[in-house]
Amino acid sequence: MDVRPHSPVVAALRLCLYALFAGLLVFAAVRADSPAAVAAALATGAVFACGVLSPPVRRSRRTASLWLAALGAAWLVLLVFSPAAVWAAFPLYFLQLHLLPVRWGLPAVTATAAAAIAGFTGHGGQAGPGAFIGPLLGAAVAVATVLGYEALYRESERRRELIEELVATRAELAGAERAAGTLAERERLAREIHDTLAQGLSSIQLLLRAAQRAMPAGSPAAAHIEQARATAQDNLAEARRFVRALTPPDLEHGSLAGALERLCSRAAGPPTVRFSVSGAPAGLPTPYEVALLRIAQSALGNTLRHARAGRAEITLSFMDTAVALDVVDDGTGFVPEAVPVGAGAACGPADGGFGLPAMRSRAEALGGTFAVESAPGQGTAVAVTLPYPAAAARPGGGA
Image 1: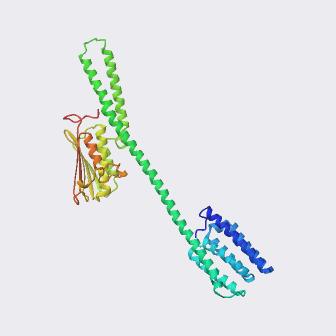
Image 2 (image 1 turned 60 degrees about the horizontal axis):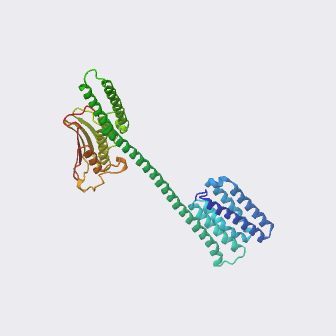
Image 3 (image 1 turned 90 degrees about the horizontal axis):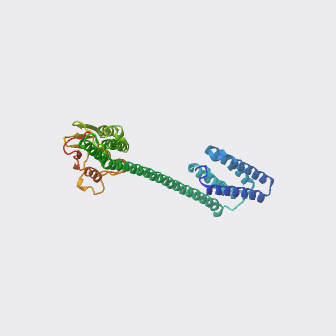
């Protein structure tokens, strides 16, 4: 048994048990009405008080065992002089079961019950069923009470630990959702600024350049147009800085190819993940880089968790009019048509919450195509193709 109190209720019960034992000692001394019994009761009470007031008894099982042995010996001496001392066996049962482990507590209770029966009959009591049933029934009640409480306490502790774990998990999920929402909002803002403000300022700057070229030399409006063009150029540069500041962390300090290479190197295999680039790398607008990076993260997350693959490869291909991303593995594969709408091969928080429909939506939002080829036992291939913003030429960078 745990020698420490489990709760305030147990502490109160322990005080009641102490009071009961002390009262029974007084009762045994009064009933015996002999100096020897009084002396034995006082000695037993002194040993009992030493244990109650000694903190090591509650902290150390070895100390508790020694104290119970001394208390039991003093009680046996009292039992010799006073037959009423047999009643003190009942609180002794609880002390032994509370302070000793089960493998020691049960034999101690049995020995105490046997001593109580022997003391009762030794003082001339009738050796009938009552002499045996009383101590044994008291021992059984004590064992059932203490062991039942211990079982309830362990169950309560398991429930408490489970509740604490659930609360901690809920807090972690809430934190993950907040982080995902923050990243999604950053990406949305970057996309909106790029597609509206930055593009509008770029158009204004081009129109002002055209107006400057068409303006007669020496026109008094030339200085104002130049000032307006310079202001538009400065604000365009500021808008681009906002877009860069709102991009995902993996894209803040490098290109898309570098972010994908770091993604592959950080993958905890198996499988072995390789990254390759095909064609001459070209700068892409931020929304393109974000979409391709998120799709790669989601597809690779599917492979790591579900495919049981031996190897996987991510390929970024720069073509004349489009950029393509391919994620291929040699895993178990699946039936794409069997994936329900709104789910994916993996759509848990670890992969950012993007399933197959979300990957397709990202690609189609930028005018691209998304395809999945897979079959059971034949691995999986995810292919994304995004056309460059310009009609038929590579972009030199984001606008």
